[in-house]
Length: 249
Image (cartoon, rainbow, N blue to C red; front, side):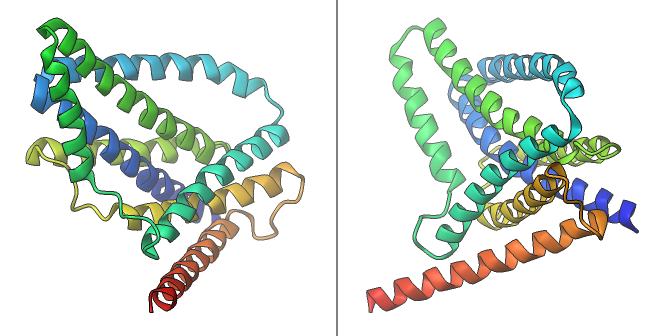
């Protein structure tokens, strides 16, 4: 039961977190492809993937030599930073204090910026476009790599974490290739709400493990922590909404 819960939670967390990042990277790469064609989009994408692959290979031995308690504590703290940041923004967006993230608007802004570079000669404009794709894939891909390594840091969980991330990438890219437009219909803020709770739950779990305070229920504590932070986030979003309504009245 514990193994099944660990596997399902790890795959789910990796899938949802990776899906959010891939959607955001896809929006930029699609804009590059629409404005300048597939060549600079693919060039920037594959260059970023190559850099990420080198970074993972270089990082592997360092992680292997790090004492397990210190590694778990470090990963837990980083997951808390990521998770609480995502949860905070999701709460504020759900409460109406921040505007919802709009992939269609992001696509329009990126295409406008790229078209401004068309005043340059073709070679320079293609270079600007390839750089935009490179930066998007590198930044979002780095977060995917970190999430996979962090969530899968316990022995036996790296494979399910990688499976979740790979499935998310394949699904988003397949859907994006078919529709050839920004994936604005995906409820990104809802996904970020869930991902924020997942990463925060994992972060608390790993921090306690790294400090030498293991959970009596083992990995089964993770779904409980995730549910706790998700409910807390929803309650805070409702409070923000109510507070804004009161102030507006």
